[in-house]
Amino acid sequence: MWRENISLKKKEAKKGKMPRLIKGKVSGAVSYADLFGAGIVKAIEERALSPVVGNATLVSGGVKLAIGLIARKFLGRGVFGDSISLGFGIDGVEDIITAVITGRMSGMEVGGGENW
Image (cartoon, rainbow, N blue to C red; front, side, top):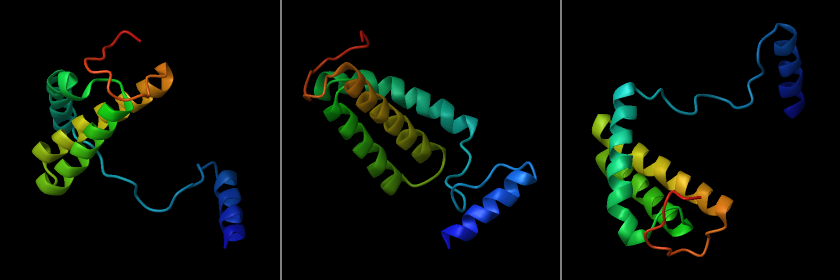
């Protein structure tokens, strides 16, 4: 089966097309309303949760990702649910990446900041 995929990719490359690395659609498009709402949610929740779970740590990233997943499950789709889950999810991933880059992986540096 993988040989068929390779030959298909070679045929697509000869036609000047980009080969498909994954099957199907990964996610739908995000509207500008969702992006704007996610930006508002991220700005508010980052300041509100920083004294409680910290910022830019693995713990704060995990908590924010969990809240984003829970929001997606219980609030569903739509501008409100998408904005909340996207805002928390993006901030959670940002916190985890920042913690890895800066070496602040111990967890509860409460009140962490943007000075990395």
